[in-house]
Image (cartoon, rainbow, N blue to C red):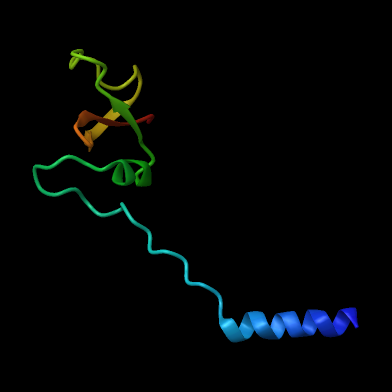
Length: 83
């Protein structure tokens, strides 16, 4: 009985098909002259560092490389990556 239920479950799963994985988003390049999105940054192995208040001088942490600027809503920041 248990084996018959497993077979029936497998038949149902194969008949319905498996859902296709969602397309990978964010690995495209930003618009020319535009800021990178958070998804584009993380796709390249970076992390987003947001501007803190009026301290526009503070970019990436020491030892990190700035890949591009990032725009999150009205906030601005940078895409930073450790070498």
